Amino acid sequence: MNKGIGRQLPHEVLEHYRFRAIKLRRKGWKIKEIAEAFGLNRRAVTRWFTTYKREGREALKSRKAPGPDFKLTGGEIAALMKDLERDATHFGFETPLWTTKRVALLIKKETGKTLHGSNVWRLLTRMGLSNKKPERRAMEQNPREAKRWLKEEWPKILAHARKWQATLYFQDETVVSLAPVIGKTWAKKGKTTVVRLTGKKGSVCISSAISPGGRMLFRIEKEHVTAVTFVDFLEKIRRQHSRRKVIVVTDQARAHIAKRVREHVEASKKSFALYYLPSYSPELNPDEGVWGYMKDNRLKSHTAMSMEELKAKIMSCLLSIQRRPLLVRSFFYKLDRL
Figure 1: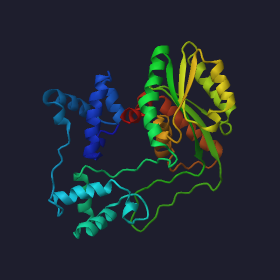
Figure 2: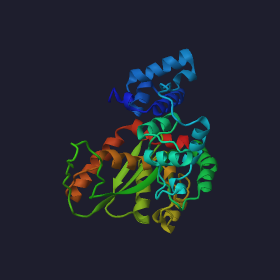
Figure 3: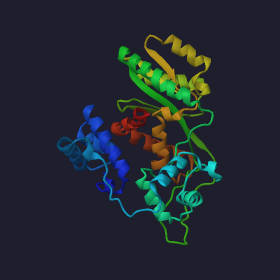
């Protein structure tokens, strides 16, 4: 665990962690578990609880130094905040994302005032904004249906699980390519680092399922998922809980809604239930967190030169995740916040 990582996090992130830690503590989490889930020093988390007990919730809020005054008036800042809630394309830019350069151009256009990029960054931070990677969201998604699922269907699934005293899983599949996504690295100015990779093509398909309790099951598939292989994976889950009922939540991929799957669910309905997420709504599936962690952390810029080597790296990564129930449980945080 990196004991200095807290110093590297933005103030608003640490503030969110502090309030989230209080909620987890109330749910019975130990301080060690909370610290491990957030990747922080145990003593730092202990100080949060001490401060909370002595001074209350208000003491956990960030108190960043105010810094220098900016040229914009309160009214201009309020107008800027409203503008930034819209895509950058509304103001003539080619793509929807905001950069400090684009914000500076917008300020110049709207107020006639010029701000240096570093001052724009500080201004946006003071406004409560942060620079972060946006979520991908399919244009085909129906936002109302996603909200309805959260409000109506998700509580029904939880109630069903409690009534059955069932084990609940979220399931998903992904594909990992032999050609990796290349991340960034530090290097001398004017000198580009070279990473040698294979020119061969190929990919590996993986199925996994995770539970809110921190359990994870997975399988490297021999082929792309079909109704037959999906049913077989569902049976793999059930075999792990031969004395308990099982509920699985998954997306509406073609293989998941096939006739063979429906027949299997009907034949097993006394001890097994299958629920579906709304179409084009991967953000509602905590199992997506497994793929994000694996691809953005463990397998980013991987140097596998063959399919066998790639499968070995994937297996090592998945086993590592499987052995860390607190990490698996952390993938459900996002669902709690939606």
